[in-house]
Length: 194
Image (cartoon, rainbow, N blue to C red; front, side, top):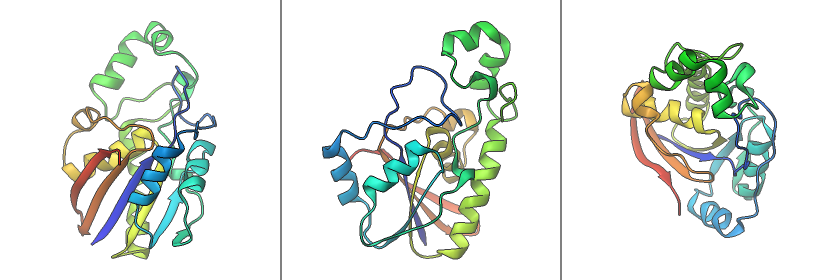
């Protein structure tokens, strides 16, 4: 069994869509960071998306027992295209039907010049499958983003994208998923805050 410990990056305090825009994380909650670091397994590989908010969160969680893997661009948040940097109300005003469908019928609906839930999940699944193969039976700590983590919650629970989106994933929370072989998964903890 391979155990994934998904950690959402620290908060950005942005009040807009944040996808591939490279904005920093606030890592000032050292008490929470220390609790999460203590909660995570010592003997693990550690990977993050290549966006600075994930990279820096991984940096503060890294311990001597972790083997740091190269950053993974395919663990980036969903690409929101032209919506990235826009306030939710501005998106709804610009694309009322599309933005409603994006949240209510996720799957193949995509933001203008962006990607869909299914496209995001496909690229994340590819990274997860590769790392499951190369680090089978171990612990993998992955520091990534809200949407990325939810695609793997969907996979583990075998639910629809809409059902997966109902889960809350707080900043610096840990979601632990077990890969039991082939495409058998089990969700151990979702949105755990130690």
